[in-house]
Length: 432
Image (cartoon, rainbow, N blue to C red; front, side, top):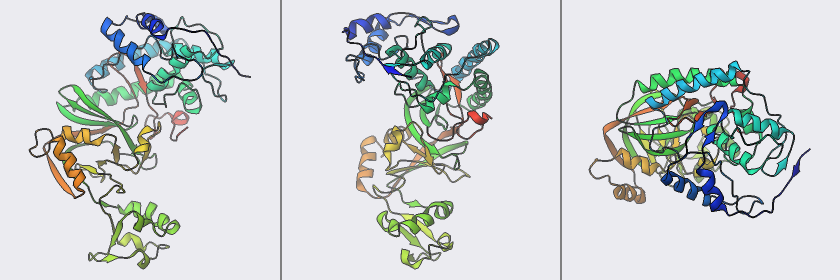
């Protein structure tokens, strides 16, 4: 049974938050986080004030965990410091496991701020174990806004949609046993050590399970980009390469594998699909064919070349980033930008789609004559195919890291989307 409760007590939000962010945090296991410096206090305070108001708590006065420290945004997610922090976290998780781990949170009932439910007591305990809820926060069965803030922090650390509501995907992450998380940290420590052995001063890294891209310059993350990566059955590969060229307003040649798997079934269902999306058909001699000339209920189509014109409809968007790869993959823009807002961003056939791709391309072409941001924008507006060489070529790494610890001590986990960690039943390979 669940009941929703409300409060009508008025609070001055700024006064409350000023006191809250100035306090030290006591986490599970006795780990103490220091008070924020004055300047950091004010930055965090303002970010909390500016947050969207939610639900029936008029000022949402405690809508964000009061103990959260300002992120060190310029630090690369994966770095030598990440290795050290992960080693320390492994020791801490070994201690948690030796004490029996953490208990599960009964699922089946969606939980959100204002609810009163027996499962919330177990939820509080689980959030305390992970350091997301202050150990002194109480143990009642009310989902108050401190619990909501702790859930948001937990969701952010686990790559789950951050909305403060406990539903299927959050229950799944909460109920993965501590010993499984410990093994995940150990597995990924090996990967982290291998990755850091390859680092140079200027490079781009895509962490596939996190669906995130970073541009790194001399130890600083100069930009971060949300990504859309390969589906579980069309996995993005782990690669080490170099970015050598940018195509503006690219053509797209449909790979034979996609002709067979996607295009033929689509044409059977939508005979005008190729025409609507400006995809031309060419025979081996270069002669253009009409869709009506092909038998779409056979394998005939795989003998032809399908080429999509540049434009807003193009599957690659306005930019394609090229690098040598035996897998035939690349990075690119997309017309389906709504996908970047999803929590589960595993939708591609192996290539990587990049949010705010112009920012990344501007950085890649830094110092290349004729390719300032203004000139990049002009090239795209022209609608014509234009190419730019990246000189010198920029190293690129697509990596598979599902567990790591940031240099400021935040333990991060992501779904083992391609089941490479051996999580078995705990691997999540679909949205939920």
